[in-house]
Length: 402
Image 1 (cartoon, one colour):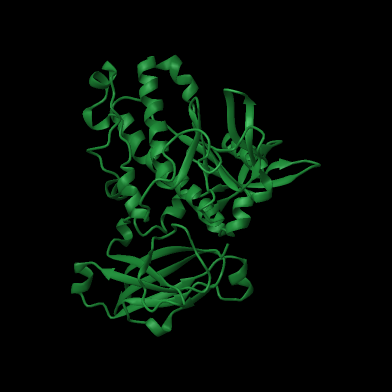
Image 2 (cartoon, helix red, strand yellow):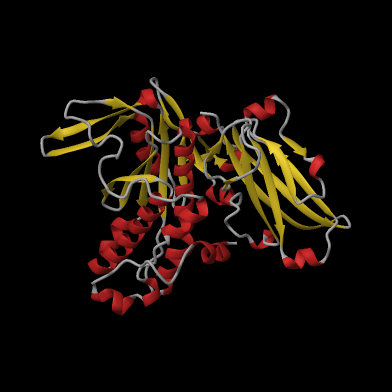
């Protein structure tokens, strides 16, 4: 799965960072210099046309605040850190350390921007980024933050680190902390004095995102309770950390647990999550590809394409899932196409409509359904011949009417 995704998503021959250090010519092969994801291609795949923010510093929506002006507005905070980079200066030359750290940080910036994030601050070997703003739905901002984090982990672990290793450089790992603060929980204002100031947040969620990042293991993403509650994420994506207490392994569920606040955390399973992206070609599911289109009540045709897991659709929209078979699969004349809706979340469970087959579309290359429940759901498509499974794929859909 990993190698095919690398080839699909990233252009390995262009968009490199220009380097002036002699180290590049001597140490790193030309195709490694260091490799950055082609964010333009990635944006096209996820249905984005332009970056939201291309400058570091104050958030574009709040950069014009006067000295004493304050405003409350939601935001998703993301802390991304290079694990173990501090020790690099004791093991490698400064040029090598710069090469490694700049490659990772530049890749972080590219992917954060592709998913409509804003890079607020570089902090040594870490980045503080914000997702959301006045033009974004809250659910979309949270989903963008999750998607950026998942693709970041994917890219660093499966492209950049491999290139480093092949050039005798140490493998890099990152860890990420995410949390969401609602409108009444985030204040934007100036900090500092004239000419030495910054417009940033005062928020539990931003502070806790930093703590979540520090609690994350290498190659992991930690999310706070507010994110899980807002999206009603399925348990499939949520792992509880453990710790050793008196020689026994026990659950470590809380990032804060005291007389003032009890706040849960989860390790987000980004690898399982990426399996629900149709834009990622998976070898075991490569014989069929899925697309999804939607229409509003006022529209006659399914003209709007929804990219899997990219934003939240409103409730009560009509969906049309389509399947395309590979030439090899078409040639064997499969006799059965089975569409199964898999709803997750409290609302679907309350209505007892979590899993059901779309019988009206059996044997058809499309299925019509409706967005009914908040949460992350997926359509499963199976292709059979004479009762034997020949191919299968899933398509992830977020639903939220915020």
